[in-house]
Amino acid sequence: GAVVSQHPSRVICKSGTSVKIECRSLDFQATTMFWYRQFPKQSLMLMATSNEGSKATYEQGVEKDKFLINHASLTLSTLTVTSAHPEDSSFYICSASERDGYYEQYFGPGTRLTVT
Amino acid sequence: GQNIDQPTEMTATEGAIVQINCTYQTSGFNGLFWYQQHAGEAPTFLSYNVLDGLEEKGRFSSFLSRSKGYSYLLLKELQMKDSASYLCGSMDSNYQLIWGAGTKLIIKP
Image (cartoon, rainbow over all chains, first blue to last red; front, side, top):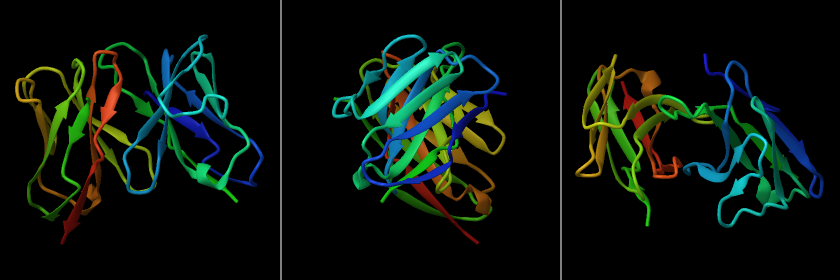
């Protein structure tokens, strides 16, 4: 159980365009979802935390107008990278928490974004 | 400030035992997590400790000392597939995970 999917797994886009990444909890209700960014050989960097039906809480230094997060339901959160630039190229990973038990985060498989 | 320290890289031999240490300083504490991450993949959950002591789960064990702000992950009977990065994460009072930079474990035959 506790499966999280992410779509797409890889995306290449041109500079200036927008890209939407979906994160879904397949067999549980995710009260809280997290969006991370990871550069090669570096740790996960939390971008934002989102709770269903409310606005996301962004970490310091993360532009909320550039990285739009929508947590419309208990099983779906989306991250839209607007007006993407090459420096936005990264591995984006979402995770979801049920908020019960261990507060364990279940990770999606990640999305590799390349902006050309 | 909040800080998680773990070694950058470790090397061990197939079949041996390795211990990966982690020290943490967070605002409040709601548990210590260990995750395994293979290159290019998302992390997968290994263990969670919130009380002092050793938790054993197959070949992997995790230890916590809250008074010392210290945890370790112990891997026994190492296999080549255990080559990965191991992330230590401390959950603070806001239930936010603070991550270490990860320890890259290299297993040699």
